[in-house]
Each structure stands twice: as C-alpha cells, then as structure tokens.
Length: 315
Image 1: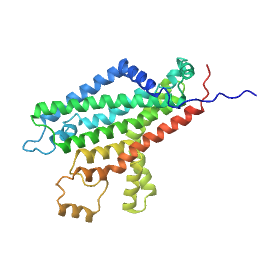
Image 2: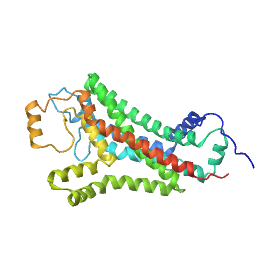
Image 3: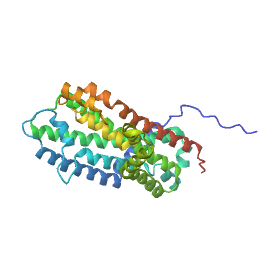
Image 4: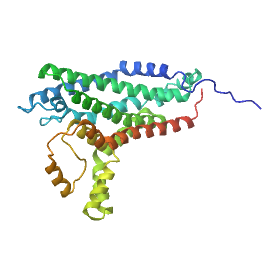
C-alpha cells in the first residue's frame, strides 16, 4: 500500500500571501476602477445635495444627516449604498474560484505550500478588505468634506455612529461576497455565477417583499399575528436587516423597529419621543440585525468552504 502524504505545518500557511496578491489584483483591475469611479461620483453628488438641503436652525447630528438627506429624484447616499455595495461585492467574488479553474492555475497554486483552507479564506478576506478599503475611503471623504463645508468637527457620538454605520455596511457587503463565492465554487462558468448572484440580489430587493405580504396574509392569524409573521419573514432578507440597522444608527430619534401597539406609542409620546437615544441604547436596538448580518456572512463562507473542500482538483 502507498501511504498518503501527511500535511505538515499549519493549514493557514500562505494565507496572507494570498490576501496580498488578491487585493493587488482587485485594486488594479479595470472593473474595480470603474466601480470606484461610480461610487465616488455618487458620493460627491449626494453629499452636495445633502449640504444644500440641510435644515436651517439645527445643529444636532449634522454629519449623520449627510448620509440620510435626499432630494428628489435622487435618494440619500445610504439608498445608493443598498444598490452599489452588493454589486461591488458580487464583482469581487463571482470569479474568485472558477476563474482559477478556467485559467488552469488552481492546481499550480495548490501545488505550492498553500492549502485549500488558506486559499479560500485568503480570497474571501482579500475581497472583504478591498470592499472595506473602498467604503472607508468614501466615508472619510464625506466626513472631511463635511468638516470643510460646515466648519465644525463631528462630535464623538457622531464619529462612533458613523463607524458603526461603516461596519454594518461592510458586514452587509460580506453577505453578498460570501454568496458570490459560493456560486463561484458551485459553477465553473463565471458568467453563470455572476448571473446567479445578481438574480438572488434582485429577488430579495424586488420580489421578496411581495412574497412576504402574500405569505403573511395566508398564514397569519389575526392582524397582530399577520404583522409579526410579515416582519419575521422580511428580516430573513439581508436588505431588511441592513435598512433597519442604518435607520437606528444614523437616526438617534428612532426608538423602535417594526410595528408599535397603541399603548407603546402613547408611552413613547409621554416619555418624549423626540429626544435622541444614547449610542448604547441604539446599539442594543440593532444588535439582532447586526448579529444577523455577521452570522449570514459566516454561514455563506462555511457553505462555500464545504463545497470547495469536496471538489476534485486535477493538474
């Protein structure tokens, strides 16, 4: 009998070499450059509109308003992020594995002292770091131009809420990056993986809300039960989780997510609903949503990891 070769060393050997190489490829690619220009133009236009439409006579959370103020027909910057972040994440991941298969380079890479574990995790981290780098640059640009235009620095709570908003956006992008990598492992053609990823994104963006209403009407018991079921099903979508997260983070006056009973509404009116929540209370309010975004990213990466480990790779 021929003994099987024993794996020596850590399974994560070569991880950071993969991360550095993939990040360099992402940042120098033409398609990533086009997306970066689109995001920069979008941020510049929405920031200009927000600065022009800041309500006069108010000084509370001005920097947070830069992300949420809109002017017809353009939505706010956070509205554009709901569309651009999934597209960027899908572009970063849809050909990460099947592209190596088609170029016949995967077996050569794994012939080096780099294991499958390190290769897949390195590609995922490279995509996530690239997305985080782009979003952080846009975030800093908005804050910097806001300081230049408004003439005042942001408060500590505004900076903390802005960082939480940035982390929630990165986690939201991580879900779509993980999904794109799952399809990249599952399908050998990059076009098929890209189409499948975009189809899932369109499904949750357009059709999921319609299906949720129909399912809740058919299965809900009473008005309260129907509303609760509809809210539960809606929160299975990463779009809903992200929207609720940034709503509470960027708007400190939000005290509840979802429907309120009349008694609860009257209590909020009695307590002073217009007073802003402290950061700790807003974080507690969106903690389930943030946990769901992070958990979704981890689950999708785990699915891609299992599929990749079961694939046969020949020279």
